[in-house]
Length: 121
Image (cartoon, rainbow, N blue to C red):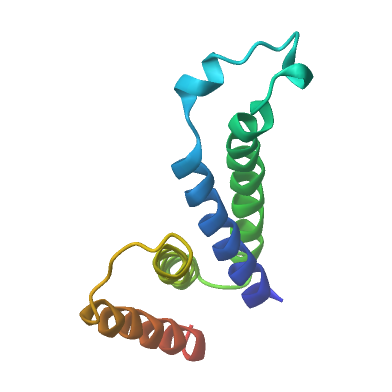
């Protein structure tokens, strides 16, 4: 179950990263709470901030659960490697960020390292 917790922590880390990317503190300061439900676009401004908090808390919870059974160094390496690969894939597939094919070689090396650490924690 610890490896499932580690995978979930990585997924929440990816979500947290993108909520941070789309969050704008400047726009948050412009929200008027009295007429919040009447303003158009209020939820679009607030949603990344809510995601930032919820994904961050879930991330910390699941990584801490995973580290109860997996050595900290292995858990952190797998967690960060998986999150890095996930962030890169989301950027390429959904955000259409330009990429070079050489990057896939490095992603493959990260995945090889993750598999190696899982087999020999």
